[in-house]
Image (cartoon, rainbow, N blue to C red; front, side, top):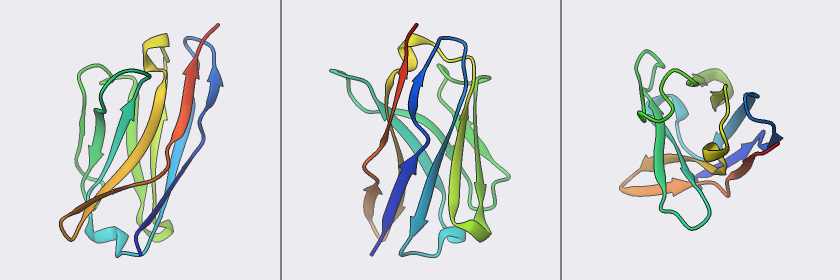
Amino acid sequence: QVQLEESGGGLVQPGGSLRLSCAASGFIFRNYAMTWYRQAPGKEREFVASISTTGDSANYAHSVKGRFTISRDNPWNTVYLQIDSLKPEDTAVYYCHVFYQGVDFRGKGTLVTVSS
C-alpha cells in the first residue's frame, strides 16, 4: 500500500534552515508528481510546493517562493523540501502528498517550529 514518511522537522530559530524528506513506497514513485502541504495550528491546510515526475518543473506558494526548494530523487523514492530563511509563520506540520488512483495520500507529517 502507499506509504509516505516525512522526517527532518525540528525547532529552529528565525532565519534558520531545515531539510525535510519524504520517503515513499507502495507505488511507482517516478510516475507521480509530489506535493508538500503544511498545516499550522488552528489553520487550514496550505499548499507549499509541488514537483513534476522528472523534477524539471516545480510550483511554489507565493508565501514561500524564493525561500523553499522542492526536489526529488527518483532512484531513492524520496522527495525533499529545503526550507531557508525560516520565519515564525512557517511553523506548521509539513506533509507530503501523492494523488494515486484517485486518492490523496499523505504521511503523518513532520513538525517545524520556528522560534527564538
